[in-house]
Length: 155
Image (cartoon, rainbow, N blue to C red; front, side, top):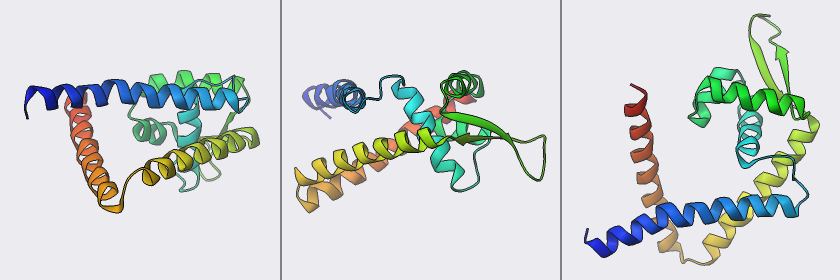
């Protein structure tokens, strides 16, 4: 890779990522979701997704989000106070606490899913099928790279 390619890659990783986050945040404010941060929206998304497969314990959610249990506890406490999540004891083992979305969280998550669907469709419409395949392969490789970096950091 030459310097110019390195600069373009750095620009993408830093600036485009920030643009996506800003666009996402702005979209939710336009939809009237002003009481949630982007991090909180992603916690709600994780809880909703993991609840569907029976993996909505704190440790499952923290692992899914690649954050520490302490960080997750802070977010969950805030979302419980805001009325988006509740803590429930597991039916079979009362020592196990499950994090469950409220009806309001499910509504917000549906809006969040729609935003992502529209974003992906917009990207797909801007590319031909071969470009989409190359982009997906490149992003798969980036995902593996960053997952490995997270594993190393946690050791």
